[in-house]
Length: 386
Ligand SMILES: *Cc1c(COP(=O)(O)O)cnc(C)c1O
Image 1 (tube, rainbow, N blue to C red):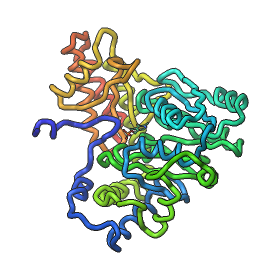
Image 2 (cartoon, rainbow, N blue to C red):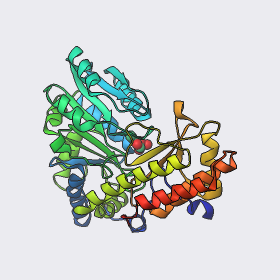
Image 3 (cartoon, helix red, strand yellow):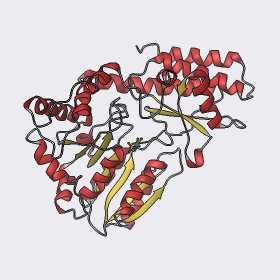
Image 4 (tube, helix red, strand yellow):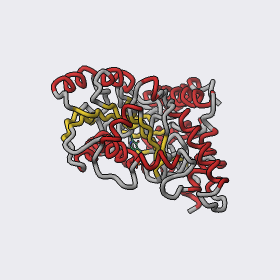
């Protein structure tokens, strides 16, 4: 067990949990309907609004991020509604699958993996199918480390009073700029194990005024996820069902990392690490995969002739760094590194060095000089960060 404890976790969620947050998780239980907890809960809900950039209520589900995705669907839509899902990777597929589960009429806009969706494609579909009630998209498609232009899409969807724009910001929020109200995003969902640096287990959702008007009319079945009940309870400092007390106390600590100017600082840090990783990756013949790269997770291409799965396993076994490979059509072809939280820069240096050396061990003709150069570039690009 000791050995796994010492691994450096650089996956795009879950991310490493800082010690102060871990400590919160181990505190004795208190009841969720007590004044002590109600105060903690109210503070957390208020603080979440800053991270979302909204005046609207941000609500918490005790579920993984996918729960908030399902909540977004069942709270806004009705039987037989038409929707548009941008599908450019595993998480875009998930929007589509959830919508199909509720028998909605799904138009899929398939975008090549690794590239951003084109605005013209969305406007063409919306013109052709004026009854579309919602457009679903990822801000960052984690499976390909690709960013979609959600701010611009919001501008476009906003023009149609009958259509909502619903955004999975799970690997974007707190790691990339996001202003829900200012940008006109109608529903935003997030999850605890990404930039919030918590264990998996909480998800977050906020609705615009326009989305709340859809919520009132929505007739898809919902019980646990009924946000009307949740919001009413939240206004009294309560959750509708039991609160996950430990997680919410830990969230209180996590949110301290994003208070005031710290949120912007984390966003800049994520972005600087992302560009440094792309430059360093290119040095060891692992260039960035995406043409619209995310600043919260980076996908590097595995060189021809090298098995990406073996590369990830070697990196973990020999260099004690855990990263993620690709899924489906990208299986064995990319490695993904998450840089959402305040991960120590030395951990990324270990990852770069480990990747280079693992490539060598797998038979790639890669000169030591190139690994050295990659590390120099990474250090140079991140020298202003602490
Ligand atoms: C992690 C993630 C999710 C949520 O996955 P869960 O396993 O349900 O927490 C959803 N969308 C994106 C883009 C993600 O990165």
